[in-house]
Length: 265
Image (cartoon, rainbow, N blue to C red; front, side):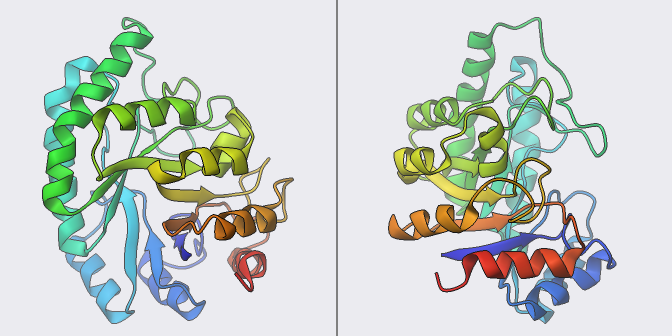
């Protein structure tokens, strides 16, 4: 299994440009970032090359909501730029969401779009993903659709459950549109982490890991991530696993917890 660390939240003690070297020093060949439009793209390319490290995933949809029928054109235009940047920096996955995500600490979806029914929102996502799929296939990038918890971090987010993401992906029917299964978010929304990963394994393009409650490193909450990773290993899961978590005891302790939980797998 391949592992990545999200350097937007891990290594925050360091300037952003120094986090690539820190991740490489700590044994990671991949890092994850949240967005590209606040970054210097040439610097990203240089940092990856200098540290022999790859960007495993970054945000693809920015300040536009996939579930808003009125913004399909705008969404696809932004996604086209994201795919272009992903190719430039060598990133093979883009995370996409039903709603625009607001910056910290405003932890809720940008708009509930109460003027639309759930059916209208679902069909808006379906239509736009159908148009996005050939764009992603041409670019050689996988779009990973992420459901989010709606009680703690993203109040009002439309896409809440893995089964709903899976149904959309089945309808779109593209090898370049997959699920981003966030075990932290889905533990809060639906539970049954191992059962869900097994059920939807062919549709999963990436897994996010953080403990719950608290969204910290493994061992700071109640999820037995050693058992989860062993279960995934036994399933021969071969997609990316990204540790997207908020260190509770500093980055060094978080990295140690990450290595401990995956030791020997």
